Length: 441
Image (cartoon, rainbow, N blue to C red; front, side, top):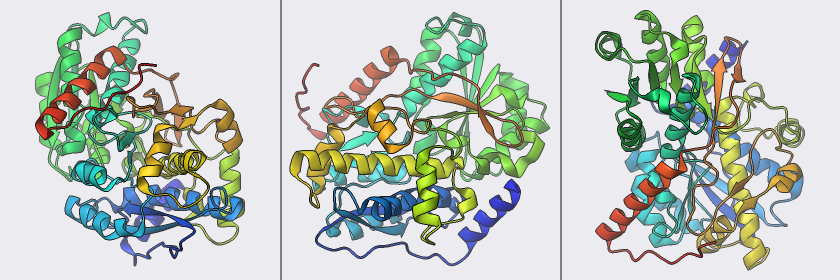
């Protein structure tokens, strides 16, 4: 059944693309939706885009919008190409954009200066430049609920726990080897500086293996991994079909797949279903709940799919990539709601919505109100901290589905935050930016 659904999702990507849009009126809040339903990564972008669209539809159909202001959105297919992503942004920004969520690290980096100049907040979901989490230098950039650096540090902490270390120790990493197999792109290279710093501080060896996109040829790389580095663990920081190929090649050379841990973007059904038993035992990081058991999903079925307004296949609701798109949409809408509390219940300009992001505080009571107790953890931004929580958990593939196999793992803030501040300061110096002052508490 799961393979059938997977194949249906591929078919949807190969078929004709239908633009999902709502007409923009003066009393509607417009949100551009930069997606990639087509192109080499379309199979992976499709469910994420569906999660975003379904939540916006739910808010309109169930709630009548946000405090009476209906949401309008328009999709522009970037094909995960940086230049197309910039072109989509430039075309849509004239419609009075509330916020933008670019679908890749490359597009996020290309839009970093543009969004600030235009006064439009940019939300990324555990991708994009980690330095942008410093709100003093990047007042319009937000990453939820982690950056690549905080995520990588939490995964290293998990590896230390698996080696028998205490939560705060990490002594057992000394003398170990961790291989990083990564998509040779801004996305895949982003965790490298943090991992190099941890390797030096904790005494483990970091062996790096870049994989040229799209990553379909990895046989030589995995032969080198087992013949040269012989790592204790492999950290897979891949995207698209690269992940499935990595698992297949790891199995073919005899590397234990349960010693491979994927990043946040390497742990979906699309990554494991194509390789069957070769993925059994594979682990990956996650930051949102698994499945579709929360009240939120009941509402999506009732108000969206039962009304024939779903963006995709209802069978795919609750799968990993769908849930991540859903989470990003939840945070965007809650930021709009927070901005309305400051500026009034009306369609807002991007700079006003930015104030909402910075004031965002999805506490446990709001989590309950939204019906997402098992889906999204409390999240709070601030003037200097545009990252949110940063904790991850580890999930493992059991051939039928993903199961949670760890508690929530906090990032190594003592290592990550100084790196963020140093990188942001270097960026500010290069660009001639005077960092703004933020309250100390």
